[in-house]
Image (cartoon, rainbow, N blue to C red):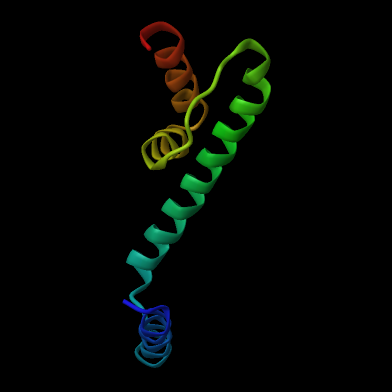
Length: 87
C-alpha cells in the first residue's frame, strides 16, 4: 500500500468521526490504555538508564510496556526480578 492511500484513509476516518461522533466509553478506555502504556515505556526507559551501571537491561517492547504500564512499579519490579533471577 502506498503512503498516500494510508494517509487518505486516516483523514477520511477522522472526518467521519468528527461528523458522526465517537462513542465516549471506548474512546476513554483507549485513551487511558495509551497513557498507561506510555508511562510503562518511561518506567522501562529509566530502569534501563539507571540499571545500565549494574548490567541490567530490560528490552522495551509492547509486552513489557503493557506489563509495566498496567501494573506500574510492581510490574517493573517483576520484570526486573524475572530478568535477574530467571533469565
